[in-house]
Image 1 (spheres, rainbow, N blue to C red):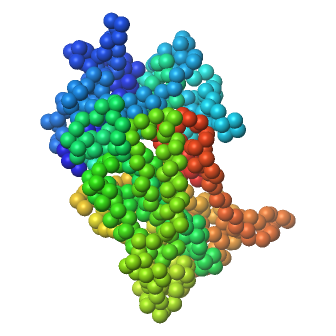
Image 2 (tube, rainbow, N blue to C red; image 1 turned 180 degrees about the vertical axis):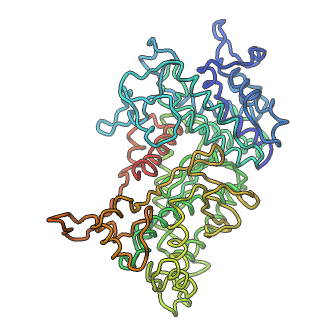
Length: 611
């Protein structure tokens, strides 16, 4: 990633941090009032810009490689209402801010109320969705308090008058400052950027991006992230064309790249249910593996194109959407990558699982308008659906239409678990050593059960890089660890499942039913579980097998446990999600609202529901 682009992305991401500081009554750069404040009818405006300048000049820790550019970062970020119209970075942030925020802000008919901008609270984005009348309805009384996003419990809005004491901003900002001061800056830029994004989400997810004469339904985090995404593409597009963006530009400058995994249900649940205790781990392991696989493809895309992670508008449930600049060099790289992806998926999954890509939806600046963005998103989804009718098509010229990969290796029979891959002796021995079962398994199932399934519940860090324990797409590997990596060489991404203050914070469904002390002390359950485990000694905290869980369906009668061992599966999904985005917001769907709903749904399913 080029130096100038690093400055641009960071500046765009933090361009409105002054709104947070201003509402918390923090200091501001008085000497920069004439430089950044606008004037309307003789009154100065956009005061948050001088607060942004102060924060970036005085508070923000920077990596050593960027320390010499501190004032430049502050300038690019703070000048977005009064830019140098000949400066590409300043105009990229300015136009991106208007595309994101200016078109996000819906006039609130009751905005002239007595509630000040420090008292107003973020309204729930879900309160806007209307599927019955298909008409936009101004949100009611569901709102979010100013609290850090530590637990998934915080994602649920409160009911009542959407306002609160101004002092809450002071408390929240002080927590933000104390944590950002501890951030590790002795790392490469992409690790630093991940940390900044995670802290911004934690503390600004609940802050209205704007509340003055506007509907405060878009968070500061979602606005900032989408602004950085748009600014990045604008900067690259105009750099390639040796020009500077303006508000009146009409040409297509962007392309939306969409991806969707097909075959997820068959892949996760297409496992033999009669193969013993290991099966209880493989469902969790396979679900996680697909998330990691999608992440590795996104990483590969960003690395090949020299982009940062802000290009990602959505990444949830095996589906992603990237905002990319529309330049020929990128299109040829993406086309080549699509072929590589199809060949890799064909060899790895033999048609059971495929990644369907859409790369033909182009956008102009005006397509970010509230009355246009919905149709653009519909076009991406329709293109993805169309690609599902041509799965693996680009592999036919190379490999032919018949999938024969792996057939020559099946002399020892298929894996007893997945019944797709060839079993191998080494994996079968390893599986028997770890799980105590003598069956023929493939290396994939063995790794997923023995490594992922066993380690995931106690993992704190997901480490992606050129080396690791589990291979993903292309040359990316992943390692699951309790501790952060001691050496970041050959590491491209570190995701943390705990609040560490560093790296990329992610939420993951990894709840694991375990034996409790009460169950082991109660003779009826101890005897039952002990009989299930055979020679294995039972311990508190030991993961339960499916057989153990099914025993809990029995009821006690006359001092004995009676009934059948029954096991139930709860599968939850959001039906018609595309329909919600297409019609739920009427003609007022924006990039920030799209990312906000996607992010909140992901929080609900990946963390809250499982817990």
